[in-house]
Length: 152
Length: 176
Image 1 (spheres, rainbow over the protein chains, first blue to last red):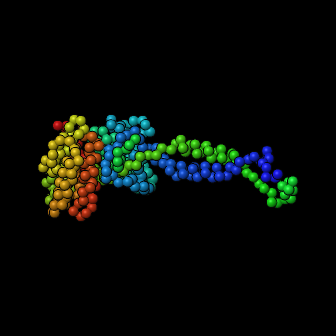
Image 2 (image 1 turned 30 degrees about the vertical axis):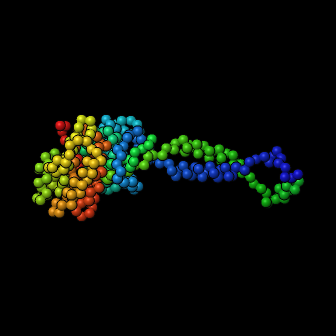
Image 3 (image 1 turned 60 degrees about the vertical axis):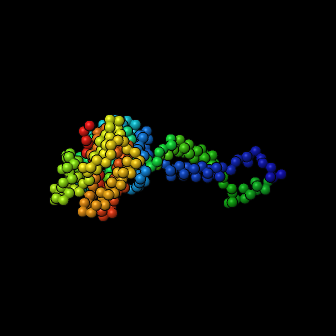
């Protein structure tokens, strides 16, 4: 008779459910990529077979999402590239000055500029952004591309 | 009855935690992560070292300083290979020139990219002409996608000392 379930003991054992849920949470926490928030996924990047995988380093990155009109896209809003690059250049210099380095406008900055431009962007507009970056002192560039055609 | 006696008997009392609240919270967290999960596409990149901008010079003048003393650190003073890419109005390549020699007329195809690749391999293999950077003179309206195909071919090349070409600079050409 003691094996019969009584009304007060009808509690399911939640431990395995909780265990599984925590494992799922751990999985999602590990795969979540906060950097992806700065990428504009509406841009159609060019496809280049030999593009190397992105190196994960502690390097300072400046991501430029450039649409076909030559504007920098920031969280879905178009911004004038000149203003944006100038502001980022100033910030990079202030950062270096706070670290005790003397830098003036045009001096080489250690920031890596990641260019994510739409495949249809005319060179004229892209070159404006690149030239602005160069005049601010950015020298290291990474041109982003897809390794293969995205099925989606 | 036996159970009651056990509980009263003291220290080995069974402690049951109420896991429902914790499970509730865990499910909320799980829901958040599932809803915000957006796998980003796998991207690659081509790393370039872009020297500071320099004034535009015709290829004849850019090619000459190869054997002379360098005047600065820009593309014109270094051992620069000039590639001229004229663009058609629709963003495609109209014609291409490596150095002073014309390579082809018309848009980019796989065959033409192979021709460019072979040509650059030949150029970089020439002894006594150690090019260390490439200057791309690009037509205004050339689409970035087309330009990347050419950059891709350029970055595949190896210089005479075996290091890959990653110093590439750009100059804008007026529209034809």
